Length: 317
Image (tube, rainbow, N blue to C red; front, side, top):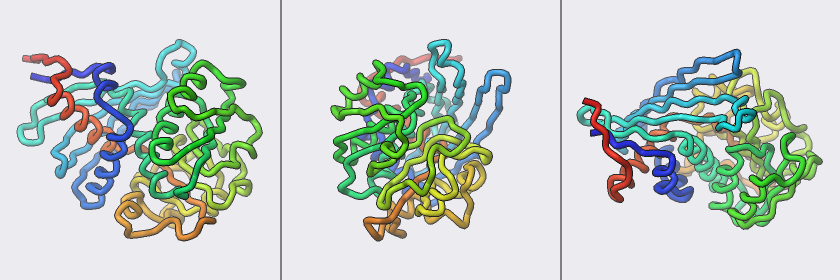
């Protein structure tokens, strides 16, 4: 029997706090060589500017094995449909049997935010209290949820071409986070915050790196091709750059090379390296989105579902 979990089921089982904890554990597993991942398989649907990806991981320490299929179709926003959609399947690590299929859309958002939460916990100044975020789309919610989970945030400044004023989404986010959100188009005012997030589909830099304050921590989660980057070379050169996994980042991220990466996130978590040795250090985390993040999160949800009796069983035979 295969357990089927809907979007509603996943939403009822997953919290940002538990996801951040699982992400931290997952990166430690990666550092122990307990994770095997395939390269991301990608097909571009050119006429729709669409992206179709397949991501697989085996995490022996967590006894988790699975695959995510995810699509990103930016033009869906015109159709009032989600721009990011996906499903995740889990397989029994002892028998190879399919054990679960679940909606992956929420997981993609949550785990991306949770990884930012881990990075922010270890890389930002502990007294950080303000966030400047580029982007007001679907992912912005999870980014801010995660940051507010690890830092005492009192103010958020948001900029986006699609947000000339406080939309209903921004108002609801403000209520959910219990933090005031200011919509601002003066880039310098957005940059004048303790923590920055770039959560856009922009293929080119969003700001001049010379304007970034000392002591800032930057989370970069958009732009996943060698030809695109949300930050310029000045920002990269002024920062201690931390990545989720160096081979993936060097292969897929614009502006990132082995020579400008200071450490992988696991090195910081384990204390092998210290990214912030001064209050003036600028730190930058480049998130690529790894399959281990999806599969460990899906495994967490699956175990919770079994314990709470959530979902429905389906027999494919």
